[in-house]
Length: 349
Image 1 (cartoon, rainbow, N blue to C red):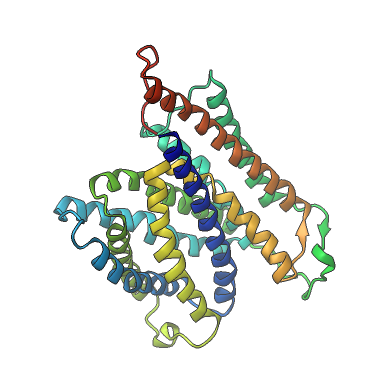
Image 2 (cartoon, rainbow, N blue to C red; image 1 turned 120 degrees about the vertical axis):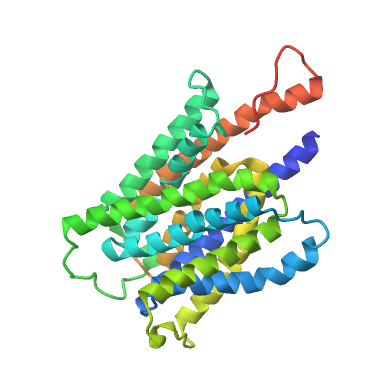
């Protein structure tokens, strides 16, 4: 049992690293696509529709005999889970980018672990014992993540050039957005992360009632496609805006539809089932770190001291929470092996 638990832990760690690496590439491609002028609502529809087409054959062939029947209640759960966690989160995120900057968007995404942790506490999925070393480590990790996100957003500091590269383009001299728009954008960005945090937490409940993860992911993508199409059509009805050319926008749609929405959402569902939503959420800082390094190497962008300090705080917070969760899970393994009657197992995570 110890060997099986160890293998599951290794797979979970490899899965979250792969997930965040895929997201890092998504940030780079999406930024390039938005710079080319693609509508964010249309972009969300295309990626969800493509993910549905990509996943549907796999869900049919691999789970046609094992998938439980869909009840009306389960369909309603999947529909509203998709509406808030996928369609709502992605569309609100796109609107927030109009009022803020990509830097702030990336930074506030790293608040997701704290949001998810508190949501999980409210729903009693997670436990927090502040008088234990594990509880203190988890709380300290959340605080470190918040401090890291704030450092990334509000402190730049000296600039560094990685590997001797030089900045290709001068920094933009456009005026900063009005403070009212900036506040509105920050609120929308936090709302987007809050909706995604709800998706991470509530999906754990839906998976228990409908354990066919591949079919569940496909159904969520289908619902999100319908929802995002209605929203996109209501916002933009010009045919020209819906056309995709052979450029970076098409590459971004293909990558986000197949790799991000199709592959990553399925892996996320597996991680949530095995390790819980907070474990997955705590890995989100890795995507920002990978994005910063990739941007510096591939796009020759300048790295700031604030990015380095913020990244370090995020890594410290990440491993602090993971250490706390691992420490809390140790008594459960001991109880199963020894069969002790004096130490009852902890509640499931």
